[in-house]
Image (cartoon, rainbow, N blue to C red; front, top):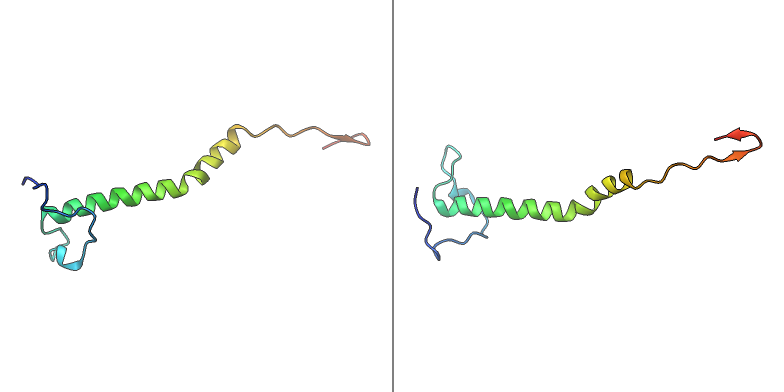
Amino acid sequence: MSLIQPDSTNPNRDLVVTDYKSDGTLKNVDAEVALVVGSASKAEAYLTNKQYSLMWRDADLLYQSPRPLSVFENTLT
């Protein structure tokens, strides 16, 4: 395992074709760090964007009021 130098890598960069070997693995540690940071930021952005809609379903099920029973002309609906 190699050590990462503090200023040697840009973890926010986009990966390009030249970062990969012919078998699909990454060539160096800088590219691996960029892959991990990029994946983490994309996952965080996804959860941030979907948080309201994901929590809405839970809140709707938990706090949904019961259906009122209404009687009209001797019918129960």
